[in-house]
Length: 335
Image 1 (cartoon, rainbow, N blue to C red):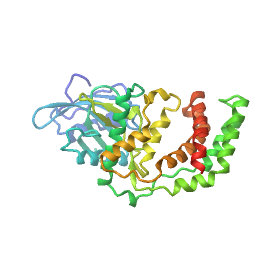
Image 2: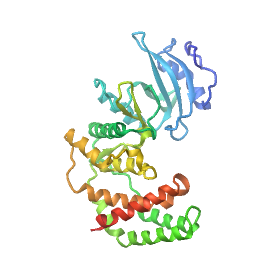
Image 3: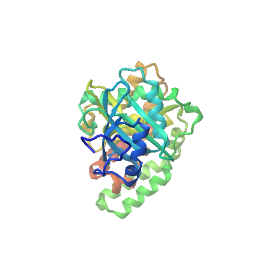
Image 4: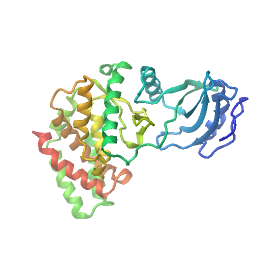
């Protein structure tokens, strides 16, 4: 409740965007944060970055020194997001320019429930979204390289299996979506079918090359402007760490690139793959091997899945861009 204290262990009244769970657990949350007005101005809302049934609140947290800090409360959060957010914050505790949010309070239990929660710094401004200039694009990729450098200090990637995608199944779904004809004209659908046939002829080779990639890196897993915030000093901070996973470092740059296929101007002329490789080299991270060819393989595989997802997350411009991606990358990927 904006403007009033949440002290005396009293739950604030319902706010726009709250859930019954969040409201019920508010008194326990206040106690965990020290009680006595330490956590105040709780205002619940639904965040675009919050996954599943979680809820987010803005609030003010008063520290032991009496200073107040604007914060974001997230509950419940999945264990993976809790783990990566808290452990990466701990690694950067003395860093003046952390690339993930500072964690001020956290826990894995609340009000007698096994439930992970976070109280993190509230950064000024909104997420970057699509409002990117060249410096911002480079800043996102620089922050990504730094995150990739930090993650191995939390967990050994070689001990984890990377996420797997059933590419053959996704291509079948693409053909089914084209057959339904809900997005493309019959002519455009046939053009797409011809390209998918060309991909299918070399699919075993593409899958073999992708599966043979190095899998000892860590990736953010959901890199785009909606998961990046600039602070008052201009640094880029990456948020929403629920999809951090083991894999190959190029995956983040290709995901970032793919999000904006339908809006290529958003990249401001920056090549995400080359930019991420540049920042990794500056940090002394491995960039060996023919990662350009490997990137072509992944682009073809991902673009071939575009029709399967179009009814949920795309449009005609995105499909046209994906088709061009296949045409530009298939020869390099398959030879």
